Length: 461
Ligand SMILES: Cc1cc2nc3c(=O)[nH]c(=O)nc-3n(C[C@H](O)[C@H](O)[C@H](O)COP(=O)(O)OP(=O)(O)OC[C@H]3O[C@@H](n4cnc5c(N)ncnc54)[C@H](O)[C@@H]3O)c2cc1C
Image (tube, rainbow, N blue to C red; front, side):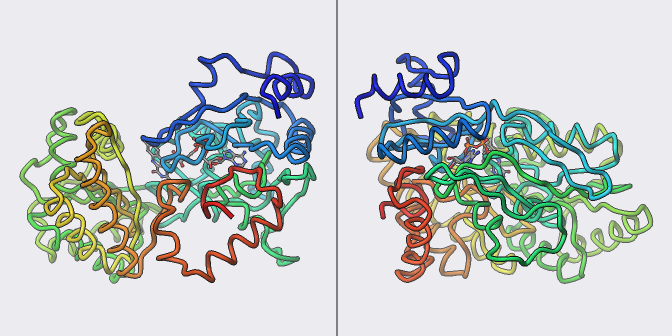
């Protein structure tokens, strides 16, 4: 379809004010937080209600126009990159918290709401919505549902899929469906809520969700432990879990990450340490006191050279800010940052960290590794310069070793950032031919004209 005609049709459906098509606007939506993937869309459309989404998809399906749903564009897998032109469907006008049901502990929320705003809204009621990606203050609910995002609290509280109980979804042909809802138990039919959660905009456009809320823990204790070897840090993680303690958070920073954060933030991190673990236990005050002692014991047993307890809420905030700043600080080192999120069973954490360290050495690339140690979810972060072809060749070789290594250890290509475009080359390695074909069959059944985020997650089909 001609671009001008597409723009005119979109204006008819959502009004002139909600359609962008200047060169500047199209460029602004041609990429997301992932380096190396810039593709110009034909038009950016912001629907304001589910009927408008339905009308847009019906039109796009009839005319086979690609549609790329988009929230805040912070994903790290090129999930919103408009690979084949067409429509960027911006969902940020869906910005209302529709209901807070305190009897069922359920919030009914539109997908354009920023995740932190959900927490701010429910906090006065003593409740939390646990999924907390590093982008909690910018990411939209819809984006986090479609990436099935995790975060710092994933170890104890789980990830987005554990809190999404129901969805309103517009299918590729414009049909509107509802999945799940307020029922805690619901085994009526296939679990469509789970299917759409993590579907990266390839199966339908989500417009609102029913979210499970949980009571805010009464107390917490945070600490930082310093290690002289990666092995000791990795073993401490496994031993804490083996001692049947599930901290709310158990994060690791390797030496490269520690040095970089300290260089930029000057918070007193130990720059000679091989690794630090940041931990938080939470719950009833009596249990917190008991778990804190047990964790200290395990850390000591695993040769932590120093353990510091957060002395005040400000000190605690400083520790967690240091962790959250790991990625932004590493990103300042070089022009291009690739943040990966390969994940392994936590018992294999040390083996995986060794693979990453060796890959960095073998291919002479700079990799800072930090991440959710308790989940086995690491973020090997490669800083480089995308304009340097020779360096990029080495970067891709290192990535290949890291992804293959994770899969060989029984891990996965992605713990939370999704597949998008970046990890497609390794999908068959993890899922096999038959596994890929099963996923493609689901895609073809729900989106036979392949208009929704084409080329992502399962590639061409
Ligand atoms: C500094 C930094 C730190 C990060 N830390 C974490 C972290 O700790 N944990 C983590 O899990 N992720 C993290 N991320 C990745 C990212 O923030 C998350 O993936 C986030 O969930 C994306 O939300 P978004 O609104 O930006 O989604 P977008 O990037 O806009 O979209 C993400 C995907 O969802 C699809 N989509 C968006 N809205 C809809 C909708 N309504 N219907 C259908 N499909 C839709 C898009 O097509 C795309 O495939 C981080 C990213 C950065 C840059």
